[in-house]
Length: 296
Ligand code: NAD
Image 1 (cartoon, rainbow, N blue to C red):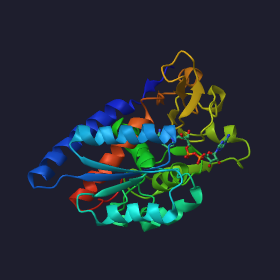
Image 2: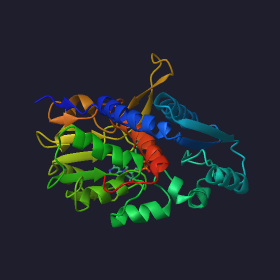
Image 3: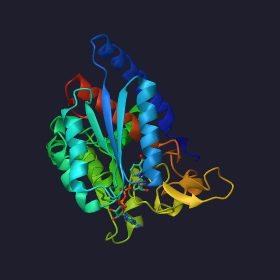
């Protein structure tokens, strides 16, 4: 079997077309959805992500405003920038690009954000509401994966999903959303991590494997069953002198061998990445409309 591609680029385009109609309607009422972006330091990967997000905002007719602070910025300077975005009526959503140079500041900075503008879904209020199944801004990568599966016609309800990775931004919220009662959930979820004994024993029993470990070759062909759905969240840079930037991106899944066994697989790039940015736009438009809606 050769897997069909779970085409994140195509699904993202479809969602962005839907959002464009909504943005046009909002603009007609005099509301231009606005995203405030805070970038601290000069991490090259963060710069690339921020540029991509701002370009996506521009393409959709959103307003965006960027504040850049040096890596040496104090906690107060960062909190001031967040506070200014909180007060700015043109800004409906705030994105603080993580990681911060000093990761110990992250909880304080996230908590300083107005939860009604927290379009990344990382404020404790939104995390708590999402866990309770209440309307909340959902974190973009997990929400994007749910949309990608659903819009590709893959049924989650009743499926056994194995999630690899328990980070606060991907694995853990994904496991929560997948296991929730209701549309977009109802899966039986196994959450694996670095202390899991015999990862392959779990993944081989899965209908859907979602890899978010941040390590190439975490999922090999002998770790999945024939006909499984494989979602690769990983974005790992490997040196490649022939590539324009001197590196290329690979996922956590050994794509060439796994695609011969899976029924569906996401490419890297072009799978989960475009969905993540799209869900940021989705949340920003929702914030401009007045807040998040119900389930994923
Ligand atoms: P993280 O480093 O915070 O978490 C990785 C998790 O994987 C940890 O919980 C760890 O326990 C687990 N893990 C690592 N190796 C493992 C192994 N061999 N077996 C079982 N568990 C293992 O990373 P993160 O922020 O969750 O990101 C994960 C990957 O996804 C990274 O490559 C990141 O770049 C990528 N990512 C992609 C997008 C996107 O839009 N495509 C968004 C966010 C993150």
